[in-house]
Image (cartoon, rainbow, N blue to C red; front, side, top):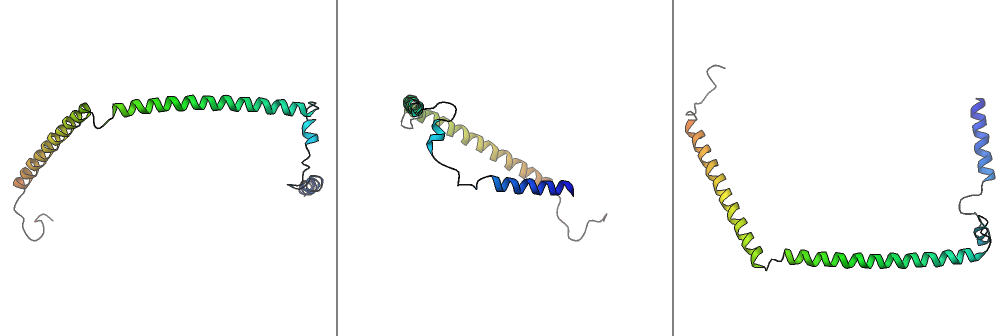
Length: 130
């Protein structure tokens, strides 16, 4: 009970002493003098540094986009459906799959015929040993 009362007092004290959310002061004087930086010249220099950093990021992204375009052009060159090599490989691939499917079908038909030939004539009624 004592610990519960202490917890309630701590919660109420925190709620009373802490400003409500969204009501904190927004002046920039405290922000500029925040770690002993003192003057807004620090803010200006940081703004310049951030601008230079974003420029370098933009340049790196542009070079990366150029590399991606180059790779994409190479991919289109390799996978061009109008190239005779790709057409021949597609033709050979389709012929291979047609032969494979024909073999599968022949095997299935042979096994099905053998099973049906080996099956006994059906009788009506239950099995005699049941």
